[in-house]
Length: 452
Image 1: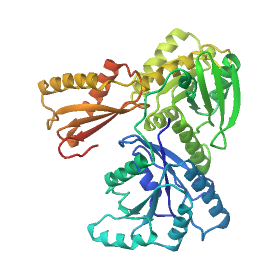
Image 2 (image 1 turned 120 degrees about the vertical axis):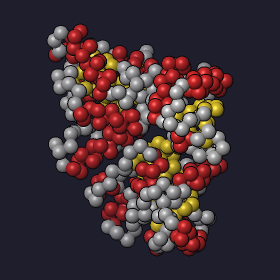
Image 3 (image 1 turned 30 degrees about the vertical axis):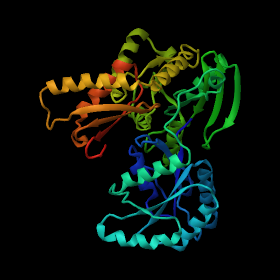
Image 4 (image 1 turned 135 degrees about the horizontal axis):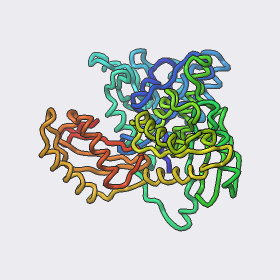
């Protein structure tokens, strides 16, 4: 089951998108005055909490504003609430409760969802008395935060975790077998890349060569259609996306929409297939798109398309692989397939690579084996020359899969060096077979209870 969804709602300019960015912690929500963008919902994952959850950011609700735009925004917010397990209602604590806030509260009361009142812009102790005024909204004690400065975020995460647990969310259960296994949802594959690299041609080739059952389903964005593919390799949901253009090659709003839709597709996916053009080489925009996958903690497969046009292919393949190791060094061991959508050459191999990286992301390590590994690492670290302030590793637990998530307890998380984090990730991959799956490490100070 996917993680539960938490919707962020509120009137304009209260800091919803800033809070979204702070909680997601990996990228910025795109903001523009164009109605086509501000009406859209933006999704992100918060895998660092004890109960991992997703966030959806909605446009500011302003009943007194443009009537048509207000209806569109309320409709988008309503869709977000229909999917949500809990709600973060954000208000500007400095402005106090407004008439628009009360109208949003009235709408929220028509749902059965737990609502957490978030008092934003509390960035100084002298502002705490302002919280008293917010009780008149009838939503209980507000959680005070400063989204811009990161204050109160731990308290907010704790409140969200309590609400999700009360609503029946869990840390996840082991997958069943037998009849339950047959009902396992398809592996969702986002096919992404620049325009004219052959994304749709690859999708069509996969469907034409592999399909046993195909059905069309409308996607969640205006320019994508999800296609269900069932064959001997398993069940897949192919998400074809519009090409991402380089900045400056299209209008700013079109670029923003394209970026939003590509990120949505990536966030919905289990695996991302980045399609490159063998004739163009690897360009900066390709790395930009790969970065979206990394920011969303999605495993990546690279498909170098139009390989039928390449001469001296063996030498070219070696050169491509060497270049990709440098250009995609932020993605460990990304698998590469040299394909031709035109001829069908090696296109079916993409599904095998997708299955492999998806399995790697679902590996669960027994706690005893995990802590035996950590003791070996800790012993080696103590024997190594000191690098700044010493960090002692105590014990670890795996808190989730897709991506694999680990919580490591140490003496002081503030002094965890990036080189230690990188060493731990590499050792985990080699020891337990995580392959190229992104690994999320979270460190917590055993005594202080702080983490990063």
